[in-house]
Image (cartoon, rainbow over all chains, first blue to last red; front, side):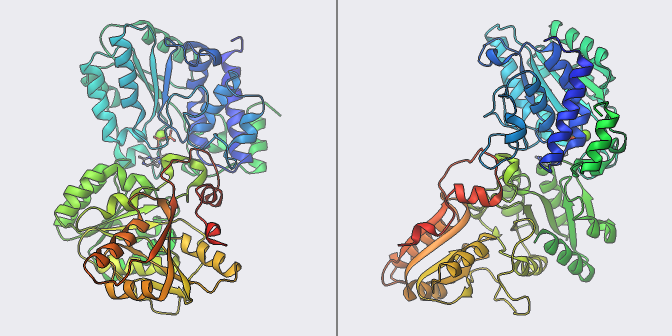
Length: 271
Length: 303
Ligand SMILES: Cc1ncc(C[n+]2csc(CCOP(=O)(O)OP(=O)(O)O)c2C)c(N)n1
Ligand SMILES: [Mg+2]
């Protein structure tokens, strides 16, 4: 993979915007907030490739924010998992596998999600199998902040630490917004790092749009197997990269108009 | 029908101060009207449907009639044991609302397809299952659930449903009743939920003089009415946007068979069940596309 991470992230954002625009779908805000995290995972840190899809030691990503599918689909597309043009043509089309929540029936996707609070527990099982079989792979999961309301996540957080799953790396896309309000107003999470630490996780807090910080934190976490699961709390901005979408709840729902897409492309330097 | 239900609930909440609405972090551009008007009787409990259901039971114990609002599987299947044990066993006045019946959220994928909920909820003792077909029935459902004490479930399609009833008529809207939408002979179509409108269109387009009934409450049918319908037609056809196993059609067959077994029905009618053939449809597609893929049409009945 030779493409620079900032270019990778930019291409994820542009593709995500294009898909939400041309198919009139929602959830662009959460796709833009997670774009840098996915660029680092798919552009650098994860050992994955289309021809490794069933390699037992490929790294795994269990993507819990299934609604922010356009970002993951774009990352996989850039890495060549889908036939050229297939994503744009197939996305949410009648009969296509590109549903608007991520689908395990597509290459490169480990788990269908879309119902929140499922991926971390499954990631725990995958990490446990890696331990029992002494396989070297790492298990990543990307969670929303609002999603941390779900009790299932906290069962998994207890489980992972108790079972010393140090091959598990959970990344929280802490963009401060959920569906129907700010995280702070709906169910505040603070002190979030303190909660994970109290549950015996190793925690790194960082700027989720600082590519080199994400890269070094993920690389360190991947290498450090000292009995604790890893949590990366990535402070992000919902809608990041498109000024009029940043921090706006409405962009959990709206799809970009022609004019919105144009303005976004200008901001992202495509036009 | 989603907005009709919530707007009606708002009207009712103005008159009845026991109505409380909880949501699982959903309802943008739908619930504001309730939240703004009755802030003391509204709470977004976050993306935590199991806890939402339990909090509802606690509120109900203190005298509220509590409505829990989320998308299809999240307010229902995600909280099944809370619904069974905390709500139904305790006969709590909790009304589970699910938006996105069947394939209403079509392209969003299997996570959002509510296709097993009728079977799972109707089997729980004390639960009253209601699947309105159009905005007129949704309005009636809100009225019914606002005054009904005890557990209820309302399965709401989403938006844009066609009217099958004249809003001016007063419906015989109560558990056990089958609502005639079109009187006819030979074949009686019994359907539940928003797909009733679809059946009606098909019957009319084919020029058939078949009867069509909307069945908004699943289970507990009035035996006299069911017997009358069975005896007046050669074939009964059930139609639902739900899995075949254990769904609405099953409930009709069970009721008829039970009546026949004890001599309350002189002969067992032919019943054809049209439902999703017990499978997941993992491809994207509009609601119409997915309904057609699942074979939810009357086409197979034509000679
Ligand atoms: C179990 C469940 N409940 C509710 C929803 C509806 N829903 C979809 S996205 C969303 C908000 C997610 O917020 P967050 O986790 O913060 O994601 P992000 O901000 O990254 O989009 C909700 C409530 C769902 N998909 N699953
Ligand atoms: Mg968020």
